[in-house]
Image 1: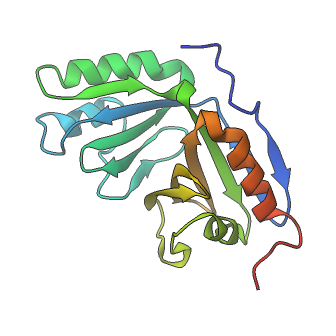
Image 2: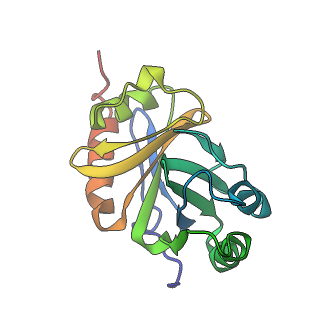
Length: 182
């Protein structure tokens, strides 16, 4: 792992909502089919619950998200990635799976405030009004791939680190005072 520096050094913006980069955060991409023997136990060994279809379990600090029928995003404190990977390897030994540290390849943002949904609504084709608590969507944030989920009174967005500055720019423009919808 690198020196644990977030993509934008914790950049933040105050408009009609608050947008901030959070991190560094440990992120593991786990590829395994839902019927793999020991998958639930592997998540339990990390103190997590296996997420259901299009759901997040836990929190951004320590949680897991369903990304596709054979892909999960596991969030842990940055310093715990190596031990989490070892635990997954041990729990899923002999089973077809792939667990990779993607912490330094991703950026993660929080969008918070009473009108946070308006910012998310501007980014892509997500029916924000129908997103439930801890519901996750893989979509686009303007022109880049992103995962977005409802957490508490706001939204969390994950994108590739290489486009973090672009995503922060579109989040700032969407959250600027005077840019509210309707």
